[in-house]
Length: 228
Image (tube, rainbow, N blue to C red; front, side, top):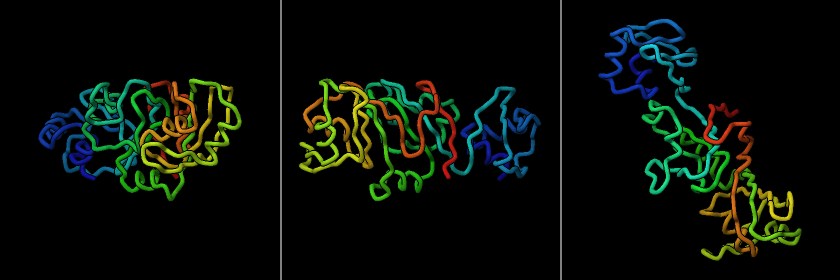
């Protein structure tokens, strides 16, 4: 890939802006200045990127995968309505790159959120036929028992669309904390399932999405991941 196109793909700026940065010796890759716009580079070999001495996060190309520990009061949208966008948690240059969340978490829901620019991976991960498990820690308004968990596993009728939905697993960590695993991603599914079973969600945290957990990331922190 040519250096000029590489900088554009990193979200550094427009073609004109990137060309100016290169020709004015502002671009350093792996500690060395590069000033030839048409120089061919191998993206996989780039470990560090600095623009005018300032370090920039190196985005893997052509596809990247991000694990974010989503904090509360952030919307999973590029056009948020009430709260800031989760995409505002990334460096400025990364916000210029087209990327999408894999599924959504409500503004008040925290935990594992995956983000990518790989449309096929997004579809494969969210498709119901692949049954990718998602584990939620649910804080309940009322104490629950084993019968409540069994009802979720047997299937509950969602009031909004008259459809029966079953949990892949449901167990109690304590009477008001439910560990719920689902393999679908319907709108407000966890909250609606809990309501249909006769309780109410007070707080919701996604602990795992497939093989990924928050990996000790603090709320708002993120890291690149490399799916196998």
